[in-house]
Image (cartoon, rainbow, N blue to C red; front, side, top):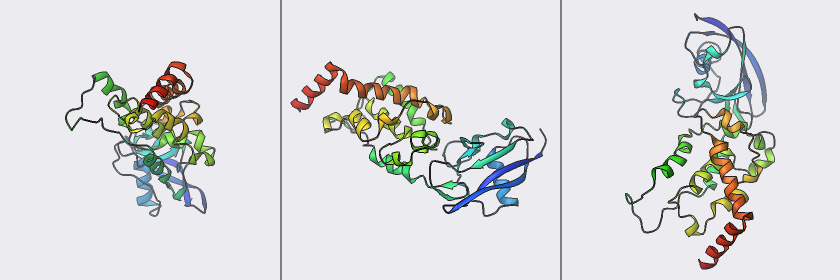
Length: 256
């Protein structure tokens, strides 16, 4: 398709307020939304604030909402829209606006610090870890996360209920908790840390009602709900309600 003029509506403003502004911007074959936003900066709105870095779908910086759907601007091709279609670009709704398309995602970094890190197994040094390949493969999917925070943005638990942010880590960090909980060499239990209890009581696992909206927007195709959140919920429930699992945990706790 040769070049054409596209109608964009871009949110402009800051923490005090703002609104959508209309622009007609040139679009060329093979371009993505971020290309057009850069052209808009260069030709009509030099003070437009937008966060980006790699332009290759690997840094997660250019997250925004395009026609209401959380997306990476650098991975959203203009060819998915018709030339006559109005394209609306707004900041991530779940997080406070700093200016224009840039939001304050500090909530996510605060939640990241609350997830206890991997606990090395005692008595093993670097290079001495041994795992079955299937145990390596299971959590490897979750390590593809680029921390674009689109899953955090679309999760209605915090998107529609600001008060939940204090108690709820969100899908990205519950996925991190699930990854560590299924790691066969994580010695958190030996250190007195129950990751399933922490996920349930400290990080708000019970708030998640598995709508799979986080999975649907993940640009890396991670099956967050099916492979991380649901299994973690099942293990947390077993810990609390399955008689043999409960008894075993009590015996281990008493012996330790």
